[in-house]
Image (cartoon, rainbow, N blue to C red; front, side):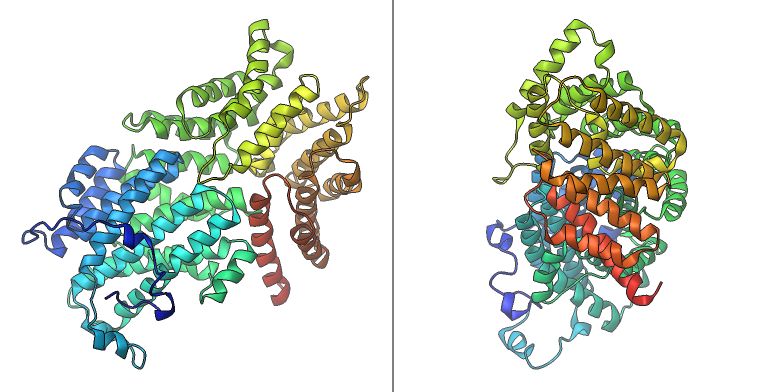
Length: 580
């Protein structure tokens, strides 16, 4: 019988288990837990030194029979999935994690019928776990956690978040058990305990962080079934795991880097903790000087600081450090594309957008649109053949629309709307690359004035073009609102809040005359709220966020904005309550 699962969820705990085939039994006499941990650490060293084949070859032979070899094999596929964001990689990782769950499940502690019934009236005897059963429970929880994270990546819809939330209820129970095992079991092997503790830190920390970031409507559902997320506790656990030299230290490191340098940047108004990232990367690049992951994150750190030339150097080193995973080159190309856009180097940006469009399988629809709008930014210097290519690219954007699990990707729908608008406006769009930058939250880089000045000039020129146009269009107010939103966002990040507020208020004032771009208003309200907060107008800021959350729906990239609203409201209400 399954161990330590809330009886209310016993039948629905994780239906994936019903789909598992029994993993083949191999003799494990020579594979002790100690050896498994040692080989897993060796595989980690291989993996982060770009020796991917050696890592795989070390894990694969026992991946059907050993909890750590199976988990290690799955984690490497998981890391590939999250950094390439390709559906094929996500599906491969998901399948491997399902298999790892079945392997771990065979080694978890099994209760007798009497023990299972007894759980209703007495506490579990956590001290009765064998060392292997304890680690099997931890590996099982880890597989569930990673699998739920993949679910979040599949699409941005509410149903996806709920699905992932339901998956991790059993993960939550397993991690709670692991915490109790850590505290109440007598550990004779200090090394084994250290590795176990780093796993508890990683799991509980990541779990709390994930849940704390979900939109409030999802959190309410999760609280109803018994758990919630604490961001600060999550970060503390991950920092503890990073400080400990356990086998999961590297996962704590990757989570901290990913959270501070990517997740917070895209989904929050805040910046990540760049100081801890600097500390981590200095140490890891000493250990893994050519490690593709740490070179990439170093590039990302410099990007966050607005050091564009330095970021180009690190991203290029990361891209050229290995050839086994061409998909990872695409991650670097994506970053380099935006670096060169911020620099106003459209020809170089075009080169990377072309490579993504031709080589990457992630989103042909979005890549096609991106290449088209970069060409559009150079419209005055395009050759005749490039002008024809621009038109062809815009025509093809809708052809590449994907449906994943029956859902369209929000950014693809956004690109399709804009490609249609291009033809409705006689082959023009206003600063479309800057609009994409804003949607990806890249305006944060504009705190660097040398970067911001060039972007602001482009916005001012677009504003002048709209005002001086001799051909009025039904989309004039949409275009004005877009340029005002971009100008306000740039000014906010440049530290001129009063001018920014004026822009946002103008956008909101013309909302009834917008024809198509209804997303501009809730986005402007959120920008206004963040500006008001920076000026000390705290009640105004919170009321504006509540307005954007409750009174606007059905607009482009709505879930993306709700993430930002949620993180801002959570922090603002907490600070307001504490009088900070």
